[in-house]
Figure (cartoon, rainbow, N blue to C red):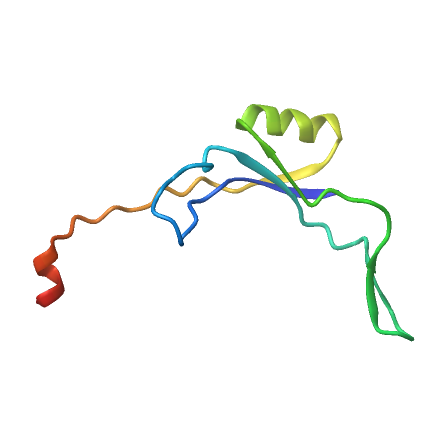
Length: 91
């Protein structure tokens, strides 16, 4: 099964950065999905993980290798902070 590994980003609706230190393992394999033609239902074959959180990257990679998943590591993007002043709103 294919999974992606990334660090949680800050919620855009909040100003704080709490709960952003965790690493997330998320399933991204769609081979288990099927469509039931007669009723138009969508389903999954078998139980799969959706999202798991780990306190650091090493533990997340150890879990992935232990379960023999293929993974993609998404880079950690740092936000670019621009200095602004209140007077910039009126220029």
